[in-house]
Length: 285
View 1 (cartoon, rainbow, N blue to C red):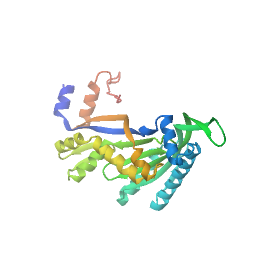
View 2: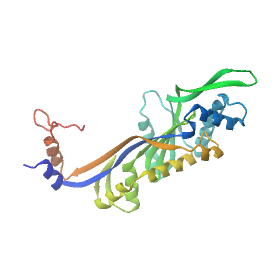
View 3: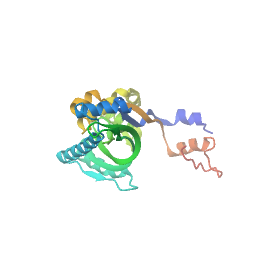
View 4: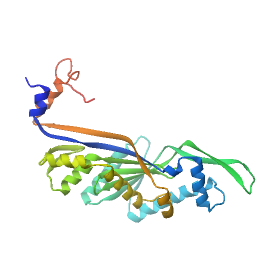
């Protein structure tokens, strides 16, 4: 009778270890406390009064720039309906772009979601020189999803918000990155929706997957943050730079068996995974 060890050593046709889904948060270190925000508003006001009204003007200008960007590049803008699966909505735009051989922003989605944003209110002072206080509060505001078909990363998106401190979210997929690197090197492979089913040069594919690092992620982020509309002016972008932190990182260890029955035999032998009737009704953890 075959054991788990023998099944893995004798019947696996492809093994790929790689980074899978990557979720990142982008934040501006210089806007994380109220004193930093006041300095930012002072710069915007020319050193007069750091009024919360400035934040409103920045937000409105940002929305105008997004609408202008979409119109200039012919990008559809979709307001997500409540309960809609955003990735399902974006998928048809991604597939259309792939069929047409296009890359770039393929769709802009808008959804109202929760955010922790700076809010300000008057706290004393005269009408000539009012004093304002600022605090981060939970608010429901519009978030903008830029769905991108990137030449190096494939389907991906950046989510932004026009409310200070202007946080962003980033989604990437390591498998999609590896597929495109393999194709560039002329390596033949059979893709899965999120992985590989077969590869003519497993060693070269493994080398590609091991090469993925923060450099490729930061290059993607920097490239698109320069290309997309921003709540910051050109002069401010150098001073108010973003940093990235990892919100979620998934790793994948794929084993492809030579025959379906081999996979069923492996699943049936895993402790606690077989059904009481012994039919190997196994579900992934």
